[in-house]
Image 1 (cartoon, one colour):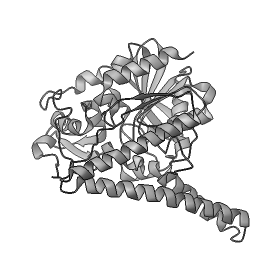
Image 2 (cartoon, helix red, strand yellow):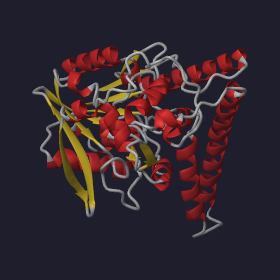
Image 3 (cartoon, helix red, strand yellow):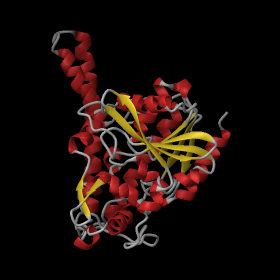
Length: 382
């Protein structure tokens, strides 16, 4: 269920209801635009990574070791507009918007984990970035693990920002719903070549058993979340909140636990005829293609920092039954601790930084702690 829980932004941009909270609202102005100031903080360019595919790359400057920031599903590199200038005091900071989102190209294919990792490293090569640290949020964890697996000697380390979930660090004892479903589909296809091949039959049986375990866990998480949100009052953006990007920014920020850059909102939504918030830019097939392209990765044998908000403050609306909400929170905390244990088992040298009651967008909810942990990690690298 961590996979589903790590898509708060996707839920927001698809218009799902949220209970608005005070979190993040104190530092957010519904009338003052921050767009121009955010846009002035970086240099923007477009780098070809494949035929007909260019990625948006932001450069916030800095003179230290190179640090490349990768956003979560649905976000662009602009989601780091507020934290990147702070990081640039210690690193030379870049951000890459993956294909399908923001101003990057939107091809019909190429959304598997390995291809997305190749895109990142194509940018690194094109810009002559020498052995960078890569930091990724949420679904970007799969790109980190793919890069750490296939490009080990070309990077200095990996930072998982609430990103070391099952699509990044796979635990065969527990399984993971989307990667298991993908592997089962592939195994079924191979069975068509020779339905009586005993070795292939055994592999198919193993894949079915794996999917059964991970699907059971996924269903349990969905049920717990549904029970915890039953009776919650829906909270959709009002016409006033949709009338301007600063106002909508505050609406979204209240869900994420910290103020999201207006620049990021403008990358995600078109501008309406009246200057307000229009339709979502990224087509739905892109989201689905990224999820379908999840893989099974072992923790890479490179320096790793895992920044985990645990227990995590939920992004879901508060239901009428507090006991069920607490039960759901406890279940997700157990799952987080299991994921941490898996990473430590597979890569004992990994450094874990727990941020109690942080949000999934931990670099927005707890920026000072995240920046401090990243700086310390960078200083300890050879």
